[in-house]
Every structure is written in structure tokens, then in C-alpha cells.
Image 1 (cartoon, one colour):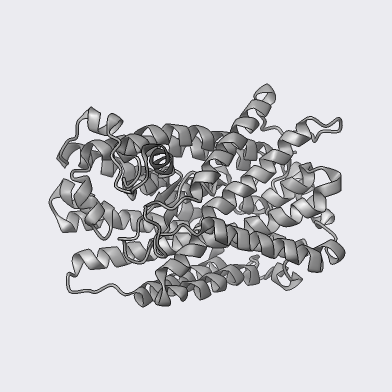
Image 2: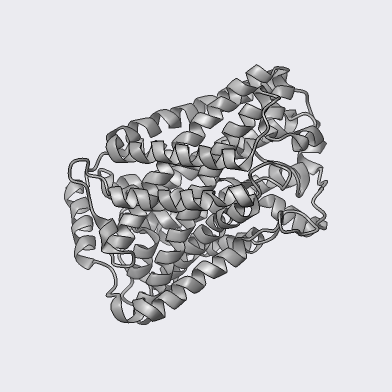
Length: 495
């Protein structure tokens, strides 16, 4: 693999991927009201910083494309190492397939929402959404195959747009939009979900963790995007980053810090200036209605949201790159068929690993034609799957810290603060994971049910059964020679 990314490019790659303030702009205040979002964002930023700092320490030790499962193998107790690594690998892979599906669905829904607003006679259909997803995935997969050398520059430009566009939104909302009172922003706790205050507040707390759109929004019943989640995307590109042991950990942590500041600015500004909450909730795509209320113009609102669409398209492009590297690494280590570990020497890209997750998502997108709830069920796996993968990796790190022959940390580490930060990250991850499984509204129906836990259970059961059928006897574990070459290659670059 060619090391195409420098620090600036991988930082903007990671910064754009999180797109945290954009997701806040897509939020709907169904649970907990403005208060849950205004205060919850602070809790989420602190938790995400602890998670990212913990992962950054591990990335400094071993900046490898397999990321979570490689770190788990490196830090787990020797007796359980193979099994825990096997489970971690499959959980992370399924979570990233789901994440790609969620990002593609978000982008396609945004395109359909813009069409609905600008062409009143247009009647959105679920099969339209499926065709948009398939067309978009094909184009961006081809870009990942034939023009991958452009992607670092595309993501850097998208990162610059990510920052500049926030300024545009803040200026427009501040200068043109109506005003709410501080009491509305920081003290109002109304909830239209049917939950009592405590669960409503905690479910509302997850709005900064992932944008959640209810059953009333066409084509999207579960997650609309991921934010403060998936910062491991940059780590899966580690083997294509120069001076990866320094660049990757810094990009992971400072991405969360930067996005935290941007997201908080957006949350406070939007809550003060969003106009009628009820009208926004009735809209087919809330942010368009919020922008229309602020500007008084559908065309101006379309222009603003089109900027978000460009960001979303770049996130989808980055998602294909990240999940393809994870697929390639998992095949290289013998869990997926070795056929997918092939590198095309003309373009230095794992082209088979690019197309496997893309084709899986295309097939899943066809579920949208029959039932958006069916596709949403698999999309729901992304958040809970990634949180569990973080929990396993950080848990193994905490265990390793107490061992006599503990692993040697890299240059990027937290020193004495490491253990407390790791423990806080575990507590936050466990708490958020519980609420990630709750449905957003009551009463629960087939269309608004949160299928994250059942789908996660099904994928976990698959991994367990597959372990007893193949893994326990035929899987030899990670390709240690490859790990040695990658790690030594990074050390030579530092010298």
C-alpha cells in the first residue's frame, strides 16, 4: 500500500467523517427537549474524548488497518486471545458495514428531501431511495478503485468546507432567524415520545451520539448519521499514512476535540434560532424547514442544505475507503476468504475488498423497496456495534495495564491519566450502549422499533457459531509477519 496521507490530510479525513455539527443540525427534539441536547452534548463530548484518547493510545502502539481487533489481540489475556479477537473482528466488521449503509441512506434521503421541497409534485418512493443509494455507491466505489490518489485531497477540501459551512450557518441563523429565550434552550424538557422524563432525557442525550429521525420521516426509520462515533475510520487507513504512529493518534483525538467545539456552537445557535419546533418536526427533512424559517426562502434553504449534501457525499466516500481496508485486513488475517486480500498493483488498492461491503449494502438497500423498517433494522447495528468494539478494546487495555508484562505504550499516551480516562471511557460506553437499544417513541410498533439489540445479537450469534464451525480449529490467528512489517515500516519512517 502507498502511504498517500500526510497528517493534515488524515486529520481532515477524520474531521469530515465525524461531521458532528452537521448531525446536530439534522437533530429532532423528540426526547428530552432542548435541555437534553444543550446539556447532553457536553457529556457526549467528554465521553467521546475519553474514547478517542484511549483508542489513540492503542493506535500509537500499532497503527494497523485492523485497528480494534488487532489491539484486542495485542492486549487481551493470552488464554482467551484468539476467541476475543475473533469476536471483536466480526463485531467491528458488521458494525462498519452497517455504518456504510447508514451513511449512504442519510445521503440518499437528503437528496430525496431536497427534491421533495423543490418539486412539490414529486412523490418520494422507497424504490427511488434504493436506486439513489446504488448509483451513489457504484460511482464512489469506482472512485475508490481508479482515483484513490485523489481521495486525500477531496477529504481535505471537504474538511475545509466542513468548517466554513458552519460559519455560514451560524451567521445566517444569528442574523435572520427568530429567537428563543435562554429558558427554552437550557431548561425546557418537553418530550413528545411518550417516555417518562428519565428515559426520555437519556434517549435525548443520544442525539449528539447519533442523529435519530422518527418514523414520520420518509425512508429513514433509524439512524440518519453518526457523530462522535466512527472516529476509528482514520485508523483503518493507518497503513497508508506517513509517520502513522504520530499522525493517526493525533488525528483521532484532535478530530473529536475540534468537532466537539463545532458541534456545541451549532447546538446552542440552532436551539436559540430554530423557530417552531413543531413545524420542524412535521417537515419531511427538518433542517430544510429550519433553514427556510430562518431565510424565508426555499432556494436559500436548498443552497445551505446542498452544502451539507457535499459533506455527506464525502463522508460516504471515506466510509467506503475505511470499511474496505478493514475488510482487506480481516481477509489478510484469514477470517474472511483470502481472495479479498488481493491488492491491485496498478492502483495499489484492495479492489475486491472495496466491492464486497459495497455489494452487501446494495443488497440490503433493496430491503427498502419492501419495508424501510427492514433496512433501518440493519442500519441500527452501526452505533451499538462500534460502541461494543470500543468497549472490548479499551477493556483489554485496562486489563493489560495491571499485568507484569504490560504492553509498551507508543509516543502518544496519557501517562498517569491513562487508567482513569480508560475507566471513564468504559463507563460512558456501557451507559450509552444501554440506551442505544431503546426505541425513540412509545408505543412501540414494527416501524418505530429499535432493532439494534436484536440485530447485534444475531451477528454476535453468527460469530459464535462460526467460531465453533471454523475458527476454533482452522483459524490460526492474526498474520504476525504482516503486523511486524507494518509496525517496523512505521518505525523506519519515524527514523
